[in-house]
Image (cartoon, rainbow, N blue to C red; front, side, top):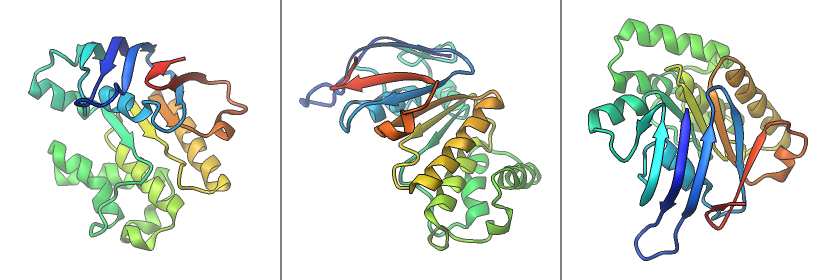
Length: 216
C-alpha cells in the first residue's frame, strides 16, 4: 500500500527533514509514527499524502510512483487518502454538515449523494444533532470528530492522522483513538503520527520511531 525507498527530503538550505527513509506499510495495517518534535513525522505524512515530493528516492502509494505520477492521477490518488490534522483545519464559516460535505463537493459528487454520505458519516460519529453548528460552537473533541468525518466521508483507502489527540484531554484522547481503531477495523490503512509516549504505552500496534529525520 505504501512503500518508501531511500527517501530524502530537504527544504532549501535547511537541514534535511528526512534522511534515507525506507518503509513499507501493508494494506490494512495500523501503524504509529513517533518521535520528538522536528523528527520528520509531519514531513513523512505529507509525502505519503502527496503534499510534498521526495528530494530523492522513491515513494509509492497504492502502486503509483509519486515522482512520476501525472497531475490528473495525483488528484485521483489524493481523493483516496484521508487526512486528520492536530488543529482540525475546519472552516469557521461553514457548519458541520458543510465542512464534511466539502470533500465530496470538490470531487464532484451529486447533491443527493453528498447528503446521503454526509448524514451516514455524521450518524456514525454521533454528530447528527450537531450538523447545523459552526466550529466555534463545538468542543475540542467534537471538532476533532468533525475533522475525522471529513477525512473518512469518501471511504479512503488510507487515513493519515497528524497528532490527532495533541490538543485533547486524556478522556477525549481515548475516545478519538477508539474511533480510529474502529475505522481501521472497517478495512482502512491507518497511520497515526504522535509524540505521546502515553498513547503508545500499552499498544500492540507497530511503531516506527523517527529522530532527526531518520528511522531509529
